[in-house]
Length: 274
Ligand code: 5BU
Image (cartoon, rainbow, N blue to C red; front, side):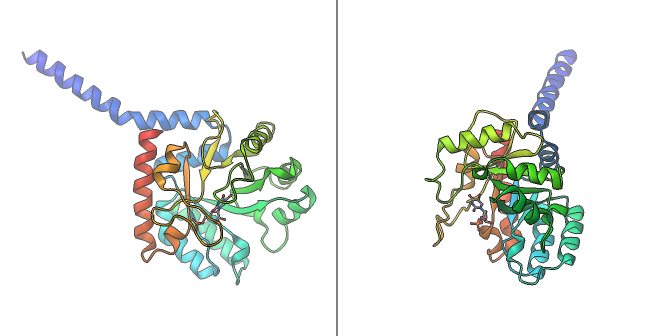
């Protein structure tokens, strides 16, 4: 009897262990699937901080960007910027942002959407006022310009990862399945630089990339300039790894509360799906 009890206890313990171990195993697998070091690092941070939220800090001053980064930084895996929106930009902003990235363990994503000749994009990436290539962990690139931009970024800083825009949350009628298929081909031939995609779904049956999905809000359906929103549930059900959330956090009356709410909701859904 005692032996039986011990056996059933042990069995229960083993089942618990398997259940507890499940997400770890899944995340390990997800990390194994993704080839690019940026994607691997991101998954590590996601797992450690239990968050698959990337917050888009679309604000116009240094002070506001840094205030929000410090406030919501502990709850996100990435902070996305549009650095050319900052009216009082200077290099101190970058230094402070990098310090906050270390303090809160998030990656910096500059959503520059490069889309020009390689030679121009290289200057926009490495030079100019913002010197994006000196501080961003990842940048967005439009694939319609071919591989010139990817080659130019590789030459300037091969450590900076690229997310190719395959699908958008706006004007998506322009970029159909054919376009996404070509974006995928481009990524495959530049897998040393391309870590994943901006998309609305996993548009190819290939999990070796990380998928970021913008256009997410639980309350708004659209804005007055063409943005269209989906819920966290809907975009994660479509296979997206990281939800990109801007105004729903930054313009909330309580940005910290909103960030925590999105983090918990997205993480719970993602870990059940992952
Ligand atoms: P919002 O406030 O959650 O609407 O902000 C969305 C952010 O994501 C914003 O910075 C856009 O530039 C970015 N974005 C997007 O909304 N949709 C896309 O398809 C792409 C980027 Br690509």
